[in-house]
Image (tube, rainbow, N blue to C red; front, side, top):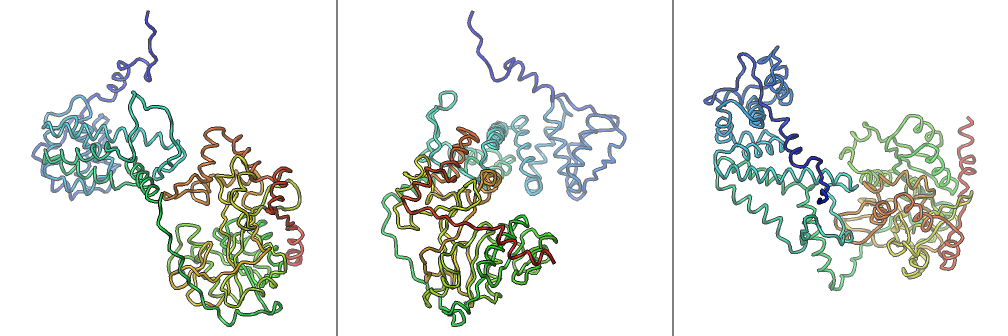
Length: 583
């Protein structure tokens, strides 16, 4: 006896058909209930607005009345013609319906296609196409309707499955994610670079729409919506194709033009070389717990900051009051009233809000120098900060702060690692220092390697970026670097903090890849580890790359890339804020 093959649906197609049939019983109409006649005048129904109480079927318990009420609520305040269209579609999904239902549905689309397309959403337009597929009065109506039904039905299935991939629907997969397995039913995979399956499918449907004047507007509208949507497999595959085309075009790139110089004139008011006269400060847009903000402020005030400008992205009165106690902290609550007073209103992204408030602070600060840094970033000078600033050449508008990424030490003192370029080492050392993951990490960091800037104030029209400053429409170029001055970045100093911020950073923050980024980046490492090994894989990564083990300390030291710099934040907190908190 042959072994019975396992099927996706227990019971096979007998069970599939039985389940499908359960929702196809015809509506039961109560006394006096009926669809409008075939010659109903559509014009009054375009002007009449639906009452969700559905007084037309008040008191009736028929299945028709229940559907009438459901649709009346869905189309509340909308033209009654849309409600009629919904009733016709609902009836035509059943095994039986009033004799003129099909003819009335076709007449409705024949005479009022433009109105329906303007007022129905995509879901109802797809339902209309399905209805044509089942009940069209011409072969073209049935063929096109059935084709669109299959197309949008399969899209709904695979786009639903994609929700569990962890990637947003508008983000194409990277080329590195390939599987050696063949597709189901022994099909060959679609050739992303040269394949024509997508254009053949869509183009044929577009052309076939001309075969029937009634369904043509509906078909063309649905296909137009499809190719305009950036969250479909068609858009993602085209994005992947464009990426690959760009990658091929760049295989033998022409010589890159030299970066144009854009030196910013240095105002006389900030050309101060006497360390005792230099006033410097920081500016930050912050959304963090109060104790973290206080430690950040205390560190920089202890270093000699004249002003710490803090803009609170999600302000609460307690935080505002606590920060306002110190006279050198300039705190701004970025609440609804604050953003309403800005000419641009509240910007959508955190990065845009960051550069906006930094530029505002630049234009009003009483400091000679201003650093735009985050709440988890700490200046790590080897001299006093004013000594570093006094040594900047008078023709330089800014001082570059290369990053140092904090390591997990498990102790009370802080240690940071440097990128190879900060110490003049080749990037190839990363594969020695981090043997498993080094080749996939820019500078061996999981955070930014661009660093930040300390900028002289007083330049009219200067704008802050995240890692740059802009003047007269271009990035400033007269920027100086100094040895042994770093910006310590406490990006993920503990495993718990690393995991707590992971979801946001992958979706919206520093780990998110752009559509233009072809290279295998940190986000790809995370995705791969989660898929292959789960949290244990991420823990192994964190130990190798972010934890100061004896082995890592030895390798970093050998390459001059270990910076031990205790921050003593608790001591600074007591020193700076103790008198104000006690009072």
